[in-house]
Length: 324
Image 1 (cartoon, rainbow, N blue to C red):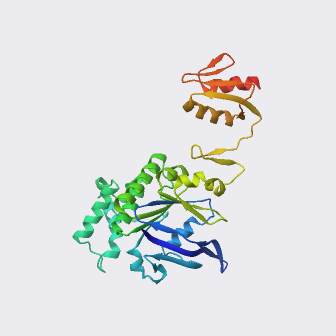
Image 2 (cartoon, helix red, strand yellow):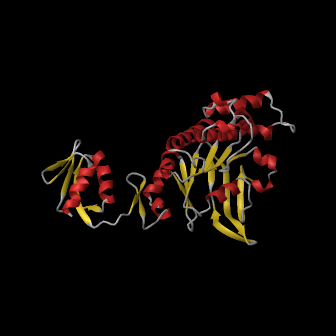
Image 3 (tube, helix red, strand yellow):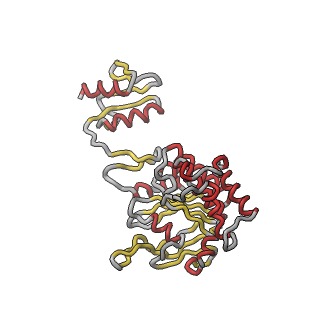
């Protein structure tokens, strides 16, 4: 079921008192219980779209609707009851504990003086448990690691208890283990809570694995939506990130650099070790051709070339460089 939809939405920003559009005529939908990743090159409008959908800036044209109602007609309180936002800006509240930060998510539901009732307290503690931060409940926010701080911000959004959560690059500035953990956590939360979670990210490899659906944004071709694998098969990723410097490799979901290749070899053998061997050969300027004069066999233990055995790729490359 679609919770949020856009109809002929055009977004942009103001510059020198003029409106500069970055995307036009977008028809999009967010469904309950799905993690959607918004991906695109810099300048394509990812943050602008999130901020427009969250009601932080006005659209140029068109509508953003929740359950059929234009969000432009919502009061601030009504919008806060529907959409939780996690932006890239770092939250700094001196001496605030993790509990106090997450409790801010209950503000739209509390009375005007902001006191916490038993239900709100329970939701805050539940949110902290869902992001595995219950052991940090009384810790000062400024003592948390970057990954823990991000989980605290997600807990705040969960405590707000909205059907929609929008996150702007939640894995930015995190190391690889924390990036993986955050993406897996958001996927799990979308499915367990049946909330619609939309996040912008540059983590293409993680998005391909974690997202139920991808919104692939191009600078001049709008947004293409679909299941990640379908967007790989139909060439959408190659079109969105088209460059002379690299190509999207549909076989493994990675971007491969376009190295200048002036030499050729023929390679066969163990599939796992072949993948890494081919990467090393490409970096060294070797293309792989079936009828090349130099033949390399990749086994589970070594690399064999013209009756010689090599125990590492480094040794193999050194031998190849002597031949060319």
